[in-house]
Image (cartoon, rainbow, N blue to C red):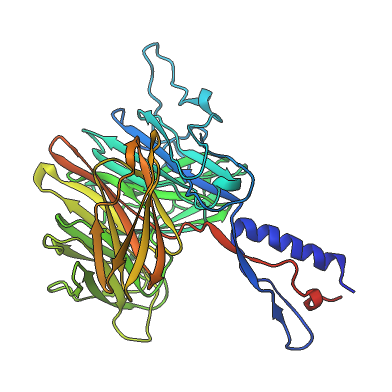
Length: 516
C-alpha cells in the first residue's frame, strides 16, 4: 500500500516542475532497483523577469518591449505585466545612501514615481504580438514582471535606453533577467575612467541578502563592504563597484551570490570615452564558451576570462568568421590562472567581416570551467561607442530578441560544431503588420550575419525568434544600431534558449517505487 505522504510527494514534485524545471523524479526501491519516472516536456505556467533601473541621466529615453512567441502554453489566457519596484538609492554596499534625491522647483523631494507603484508599465495582451511602452528621465525605476498561462512560455522583455549626450552616453540594451542566486560578470572595471554599477533587483515579498566578490588579475580584491547587501522586497539596489575596493583595476570579474532569497543582476558599465552599455551575466562556468555577434567594423575587441575553480585553464582562441575558423594573429591561446582575471586585447580582429569568438580547452580531456565576456568598441576618437558580449548558451529549441525596429538590426548565427538549419520568425509589429518566416543554413565553424526579415506592413517594433530545426547547436546574438550625432550607437543581446518548456515527471507512472 502507498502512503499518503508518498502520493503527496509526487503531486508536489509535478507542481514544482511546472514552475522551476525540475527534471526527473527518483525514489528508493528494494536493494539497488531504484527507478526514475520518465519525463515529458510541458510548457511552463509561470515566468518571472526583472528589468534594472535604466540609469541616472535626465536625457535618457527608454523603450520596453514585452513578447511571448505564439505556439504553446496552457489554455488559460494569462497575464504578462511589468510593474515598477519600490524606490531605491545608490549604495556603496554597506547600505549607506550614496545619492541624493533631486529637489523639484518647489524645494520638495521627488517621490520617485511612488504613485505609480503597482501600475503596469507594459502589459502584454496576446502571444505573437509585442507590447511596447516608453519612459524617460533619471528616476525611471526597475521593473518586476510575471507572466502566466499562455503568455508564460518563452516570455521575453527587452529594455533599450538612448542617452544622446553627456554622462553615460550611448544605446544601452539588456534582456530583462530571470531571478537567480549566482551570477558572473567578466569585463567589469574599477578603473577611474569607468563607472560600473551592479544592479540587484528582488522580485519577492521578502528581503534578499547578496554578496559581491571582485577578482582582478592578481586574485581577489579586498573588500569589506561587498558582503551582506540587503535588497528589500520588490525593490532594486544599484551598487557602484569601485566603492567596494580601494584598488583601481582595468579588468575585473564580478561574482554576485545570494545568502537568502534571489535577485536579478546586471552591470551598467560607463566609460569616459566610449560611452556606456549593459553587461549581462556570462553563461555558467563551463569548458567551452561562445561569444557571438562581433560587428564587422569593430575597432577594438577585448577578451576577459576567469576560472572560478581550483584549476588553471589553458584555452585555444578562435574567431569563427564567414568562411571558417581562424586563429587571431599573436593570440592563439590564453592562460587563465585559478581565481584570477585574465584578458587579451584582440584589437580589430574581425578585419571587416562579422564573427564570433570560440574558447576551447588547449588539451583534450582537460576542460576547466571558465566564464568570459567581450568588450567591443566601434568608431574612434570622440565617435567611439562600446557594447559587451557575454559568453552564452545555444539558442536551443527557441530564443527571442524582443526589441527590433524597421532598420538597424543584424542577427548573428554561429555554429561552433556541425552545420545547422534554423528558422527565424519576425513577429507581427506592436502597431500592426504580418509575421514573416525565413530559414537559414549555418555552416560548421562559421558565423552567418544577416539583416533579419522585417514583418510586412510593419508598424512599431517587432520580435525575432530563432528556432533550431536540425544539425548542431547554434549560438545567436542580435545587434541593434542607432546612429546619433554621427556616432554608431549600438548594443548586442545574446539569445540563449528561452526555457519555455520543462521536463515534468508523469504522475501516472508506476508508483511501486515508493513504498512504506
